[in-house]
Structures are given as structure tokens and as C-alpha cells.
Length: 165
Image (tube, rainbow, N blue to C red; front, side, top):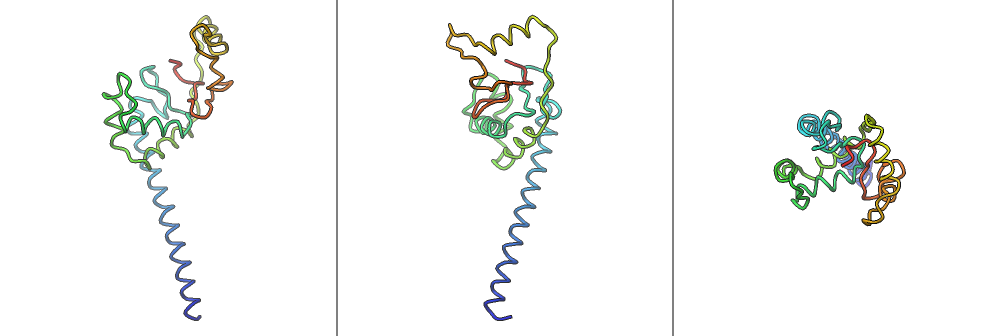
């Protein structure tokens, strides 16, 4: 093998090693993110992101990009509803973008929470609100932003299988 051939082979092996190391670190980051979701986030958001308390949103099956943007907003303290400083600012402030992405991937891959229908009158009222909105208050029908089945569209979150606040 001549010098040029050896140099090309060395470069190819170096690139292959870099790709293998990058993939290994991606897998390690994802594992760390999943451990954080299971051991920390589930404390409030429930196993696999299905909380039982309306105080804590259901994260299961939510869109990855939506979750990333919300966690990042908590991290940057730009999402500031009443309980954000007490619950999420400190937690999200300790996460980097890679871990945020891994947590978002973990929850996006979870199956959605089952729907709840224990009060038929409320279900009917909710369906009417979802389908028609409240035009007198400027509230459009929910499928406009959240999709026909509440699956979420673009920057709008999934609503199907959530607490429905």
C-alpha cells in the first residue's frame, strides 16, 4: 500500500471510529434521559408520563418538539405559570439540550393515556366545546389547532388522553 492509500485508509478508520463514538454517546445520553424520566419526572407526571392528578400534565404520546420547547421554556424561565418556579424551573434548569431531547423522545414514544368517560353529561359538554368552540368568546373549535382526534398539530399539543384543562 502506498502512502496515499494508507492515508485514505487511516482517514476512513478515523471517521468510522468517530461515528461509532458519536452513536455510543447518543445511546448513553438517551439512557441517561430515560433514567431521569423514570426516576425524577415520573414522581409528578406518573409512570410512563400518565399522571393521575390534573395538577401535573400527562406527557405520554405528546409530540417530541412540543415537549422540548416546553422543557426549554421552563429551563429559560420564560414559561412562568403559577407553579412553574416551585416545580419546573429548578428541575429543567439542570438539564442540557441533549437530555431534554432524550426525555422528550422517551415520552413521545409512550402510548397515550386511555380516555376517561365517567360522567356522560360532562363528556357530551366537552365534545360540544371541542367540536364547536365558543365563538362568542373568540375560541375556535379545538380541531382547528389540536387535530380531529386531539393528536396535536404543528406547535399545538396533543389533547387526546390528557387531563383536558
